[in-house]
Image (cartoon, rainbow, N blue to C red):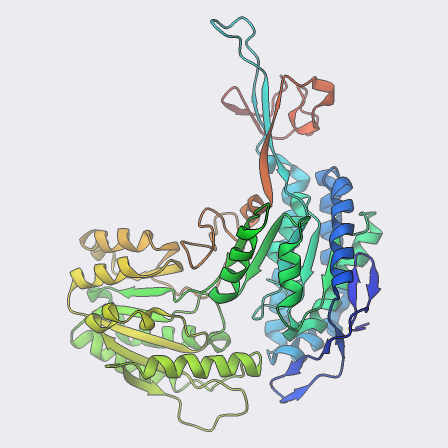
Length: 527
C-alpha cells in the first residue's frame, strides 16, 4: 500500500529525482521504503488542482462535507494494524500511543463533521434594511464566514497522526471548505502516505473534487518554501519549532500577496508552585511532575520545562524529591536521531551556563537514541539576567527557578516569552493573596491550569491551544478544538442582495435552520 510516491490530487506521482527513507529509532535502522520528494512540477500541479477544486468545494454543503470527513475517519480506521505498525516503525513510539493518537485523529474529524453538518458555525449575521430611516436609509446587510482558499499544512514530527496528514489543521481546513496540500513530515512519510490513501479513498467515495487533497513528500525545506511562496496558496498551518515557524511566517509576509501563517511553536509552559501548596504537597507534586516531564520522552509542546517557586526549605525539599523521582523513570526513545541530537545539544547549552546546578540526571545505561532526563535549578536573579535559560529544551528536561520573593517571581513571569500554557499550583486560600502573579501569568499564556499538569490537550470547544508569540503566530486563534476552523475563513458581507441569490445561510426563510443573529437577536426564526 505504501509506494513512496506523492499524491497529486487523486493520482500517485514520482517525477522528482531526490529520494529519502524514514528511520526506526528503536531498531537504529532505516526503513525499507524509498520516498520520492516532490518536484517543482508536482508542486505546481498540486496547487493548480487545489485551486480548481476550491471553486467547487467551497460551494459544497455542510452536510456533504460532514459525510466526507466521517468517511476519512472510517477509512483511517479501516487501515487497522497496517497503520499502527508503520507508525511505530517510524517513531519508536508504542502501539498504545499509536492507537491513542489514531483515536484522537478520528475524533477530531468527527467533531468537525458534526459542526459543519449543523451549520451555525458560519456566524450568520443579518441587519435588515430600514428604507424609511432619516437622514439616510439603512441598507440590508448580511454577513457570514467563507473559506480562504487552498491551505498548506506541514506535518508535525511529534504527532504523526493528530497534528499531521489528517490532523487538526487538515480537518479544520476541509471543514471550512478549503482544499489541503500536506507537506508530509520526512520522519513519518510512510504513515503520511497511508493516511493520504485513506483521505483520497474517502474523497472518491463521497464525490469530492479531484485536488481537494494532495500529499507531497519532502526531506528538506525546498518543497515547503515553494508551497508557501506559491501565489495560489492562501494560508499555512504549521506545528514545530520557533525557527521553522518563524521562517514560514517571514516567507509569507514577503509575498506580493501576504498570507496568514498559523504556526504553533515553542513553549516551556511555566509551572508556578505557591508556598502553601509546596509545604502541603511537595512529595506528591514531585512525583506527578517527574511523570509529566518524562511523558512521551518530553516530546510534547506542553511539556513543563520551567518550574518556579519561592526560596525556602519546602522548595529545597521539592527539588530534592523531583530529582529522586525523575531518575526512577526508565528512559525512553526519542522520535529520530536528529531530535535526540538536538536534545543533547540544547540540554548541554543550558547546563553549561553560569550558576546552573544539575540536581539529578539519569546515570544508568542508555540504549541508542534514548533521552537522559535531567532536572536543573538556578537562582531567580540569574534566570532574569540570562535569556538563554528561557529557551525550550525539547525533551525530558526541566529547570527549577528559585525566586527570592513574590516580587521577583512576578518579574520573572512578566519577562517570559509567550507560552501555550501556564500552571498555578496553589491552595485556594493563596489565590487571592497572589492574584497579581496569576494576572501576570494570564498575559503570557493561552491556557492557565489550576493544580494539574500542562501535558494533555483536550479536544473540545473550550480548549485554547495557542498563545502570545512565540508560542503561536496569532494568539487570537486556537489550533485545537472546533474553533480552530476560524483560522481558515474570513468574514464576507452581502449588501442589498436579492434573497433568492443569497447563500442558504443568509436567506430569509433560513432553509438550513441554523442559529443566526438577526437585528441583534440570536434566533433560528425566519425573517
